[in-house]
Length: 398
Image (cartoon, rainbow, N blue to C red; front, side):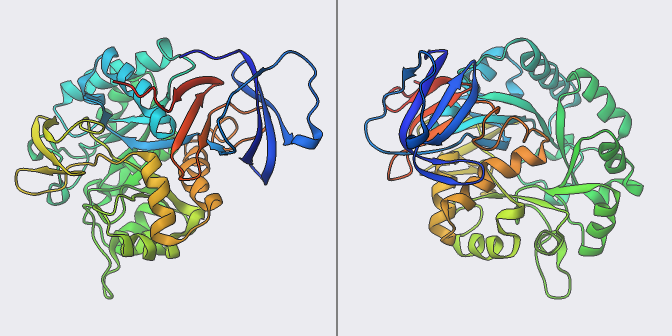
């Protein structure tokens, strides 16, 4: 899908980085936001193509999903250009303009193959007008088998600096976030190594207690993978990872806001504790997202998807089919939070955590023109990826 190199969005409600402009404009040139402001200040100093929007809408920054395995029949672990093409083309229709391609626990060979493929794609095959892969989220195999969830048990292995380094090399240095069980990392050696090398260490699929989490934070853990799911929960004598997520301000905290992985009331409790300062909404979606009910592969295991729920045969939740636009809508419904707060936890916070806030995560001059236009029901009308129209309602990816 193409769009003019130089264009203007006008007469829209714009949720800019530091303010909401009720009747504003955005100028775009060369994939970048060049100017924003109130319509009363608009000056046309060149030839700009007008972007046609049917009625007054809301313009928000593109959403960033730091934990997504697949969509539309494709998965990061497929290790093919076609799979990543499918993901980068499909995600803009749910408002996602950039993401971390997420692996899962599999054989070392399969993980390496997926890392090689994704690293090559990032460096050689990304294009404006598609969602951008910002890097890789390595979820497993350095996890606790007692908290495996849908991660295959026979491929779980102890954390290893040497193994991570070989994989990081294979990925061309694009692994940006690693989910790890702190209690499995003796002396927190890998956690410290990740911090030293600028990689986000995230506690997940873990039975670590609150005190262990404190030590892990001291060693470099700064993130929590899908809060409540496959981790030590909150108890009044052992607050666990959930308690640390509530209480430790060093931690950014992922949440799957589908109302299934975490019931709405628990989402509300978590948001009140963590607030928009530290929460990050994710989908953790699998290849079945945007497909009909049926049985689908996830890490060599068959998952049954029915009515928005993905389950292994033993009734274990196996990722989600959640779309980011639904997470954005749900968090406001479940908690009563504002649009600005929802934007922060879907755009700004993930951008800051990944170190790309200088070009992503908000609407400001000089940043990538990653924009989502929402109707009055907060559904996605149009998505721009680096200034090009990547999705327009009615043109869904088939």
